[in-house]
Image: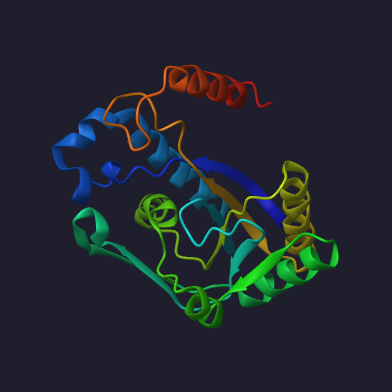
Length: 215
């Protein structure tokens, strides 16, 4: 079957009511879009959701593919420890993605207890995964997930990695939704996470325009 739907999703914790509270009203367009995306995912009826995130264990020289199951996380870092997530993983798909990637010269590593211990990194689901999952879970989608942390590889390598995911999911006959979790510039205001940059608004507008045009 392979990838039946692709979604790009932002992950600002403020859009989760237990985190944002009244501040959530400032992001109503984003909230509505996430609810619509969750409904689209539900209609796609996936057997697996593959989620790429920039907030997991990011390596300079490799992509990190989770081989841990079960998976768990929460929003405690944002003052909402009561918001918890528990999911299973598809280890077979994860291991085949790693194997084929390395076979093609694309560095990918298995992110499990051994690697986490070696590099002293957390295996909890990060907010790049949990914020979109909040809406997906609310929509009633409970299938396994496969988190993959981005790596600082070339655009060509990342493109080829995506092709590997397509190959593996088709070969293993999984009905998959691919969700790319990522925000915009983070640099529109002086109190923004990365500080203000005058080109932040220009960058965001260009990216949105390209997405609308599907380029």
